[in-house]
Image (cartoon, rainbow, N blue to C red; front, side):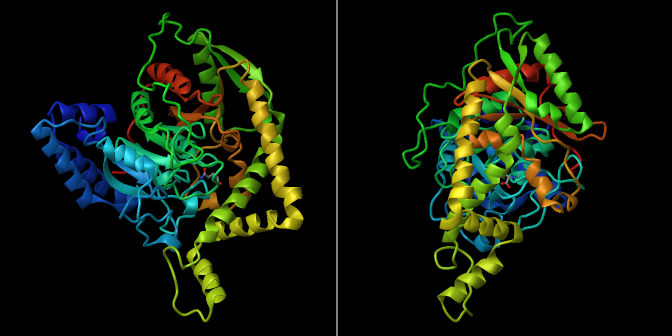
Length: 493
Ligand code: GLN
């Protein structure tokens, strides 16, 4: 077993027990990264020197016998919309192509004070808008299971790098599926936490009422450990909630090991039955229903008519409206890319934003501007927010009697690079299974069920009521015993 194949806990323990050093781990992960990057392009920035220096400091601390953080010496990759003090953070955009933030996101503060070592910043759809990584100003990322295919998005670079073994974990952000969908396409775990559980301070905002940061990893135990570090109340984020009573590190032993999920009620969504799924995903649904039944869970049905009918349209109206406000700050004065040729201020704004933003971002800004104009906002933006309330209420009612919903992450397996971005509407519609979760602020856990005949990972997700993140991971832990842990993709070699 190579060091880069180890998980978060194994690396942290091995370093603590001096089986190997933090520098050895970092160098092996870096070596693996450099060997795969030529084909994958999962990273925008590699922080080799700073990372090696940090790993050395961890080793010095160990030599001195000093106190160690939970993640001491564990390499990590962060999505490039998570601010890292002094390290370029681009959000996948030309407009921030050279911007180095003067502060760090709270999540990076938490990880680095637990001892995690940064290996790089990952590629993503520009400002997290997209689901292929194809809208990045830095070019596409490849799926490590088949480099002619997309890794998903927008956090595609983070998912691909964990799947290919660059690092044992990474962070992404999920506004309408951007953690769960790439996790599914790359065959690893991804959790979109309940809105408010993980601080958004220092995350470059897309749709602030929808955005949430979360982890990618290759074992449920690693996901527990990461949530233990990340789920902290943050006074710098007014939507952060103190949920210190949730103990992600504790797991009750099941009293009936042969029926560990006895008493759990797992729901299927009635309206989703009418939608077509690629055969491997439909088969995975059938298989998981059987597994749940065999492990003692009850399979029931819930009805989410408003979600099925209106969620996609309402999400895109709300996300675009919030995005146009959030992106107004990129004007060539306060941040990043600027021009010196403009004759006046208006000219300058126009030139900077025309050249700095890509087509998808521009189309969302224009849509958001139109939808929130005073003459139209009541009819569109405000109407969408009202429907959003109905969607949240529909989920709340559904969860009165069930523990979680089992559903697809996407209707199809990853498309070929280039092809996926041709039909934008189709792309938006494929988010049907992920974005309602953000509209209602719920947790969603994406896991790998196995592989298609063509060798592509097939993921599904569990969705639960607010603050049931731990329960979803507990169920994931039982499923992992049957499905096995996610494998590292070898084809990126
Ligand atoms: N695909 C969705 C969008 O483009 C979701 C992206 C995300 O979760 N950041 O808005």
